[in-house]
Length: 374
Image (tube, rainbow, N blue to C red):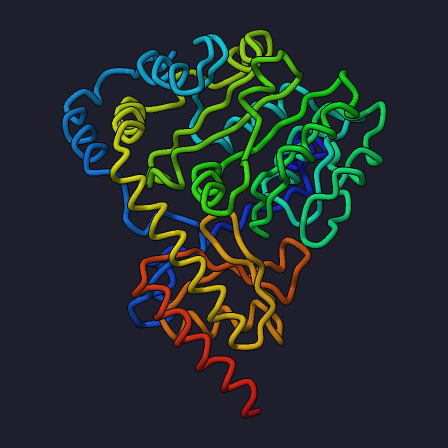
């Protein structure tokens, strides 16, 4: 018997996740200094308070971390005005998605989401033995009516990314209110709000409301909300995220989660980052300014670019996105071609500092001019 025969059939054809290219790898390939605008990371890095917490806790890494993340859970419960048993911390929100899929899915069962949404939904669903149904988008947004039509008796989970990655588009709270009234009660709706801080930052100036997710949980709806410290808080490398829902739902996922999955340094940094409002304000201000500037510059180049509610901009290009991304890397800028999302002529660029954004636009201008010349 070969080793492959020991592997369950649903895992044999599972491909690896292709992450955004690291700066070190891109620089080794290109031979020049590069700036990474591919993975929606915080260009300012972590809060100074988080860095101090990491340094202070470094001499404790010989001890196992607090498996309950008690201090962080207490702070998050206070932030969201929920009970402590309604919060679960995991090693990034992607880890929580893995727990959800392993708990609720299996052969013969499915999850439903939209096309062109978070790339981990299909991978984690298949790894659990389930099938992912992708409803078509409408106007680059989740079409919740199409999602409802895609639900079958075999559906156990619905994933709604809001804002959506990679399009950056948003569903208004009223749309989700109506959706939850119609969705069957015998499944779990996962509201993936990884970019919540940025969406909330845009909502006020745009005279719009962002989310009712906390209210859904308080009302006892069959909803789980995911958040992360990887984006606005700049802690992507430490892997810390969390979810909140009913105590019953959280208690089940807590039993499935890997023990000691969140390091003590990650918890300490997240706790410090949570209270550094000055740092978050700086991040959100830079993001709002950068989003407006990038959208204007991309449209001036004749490209279709979508207004964003997150910390990245989605735009279409007049050639295969992967080829253009390779040429941009030779110009010193790493972006994310969206071929794997079924959008072979689209690119996602993260919003960086003003200097990084300008470097990207100038590089893009040169690349597009070279295409026109041919």
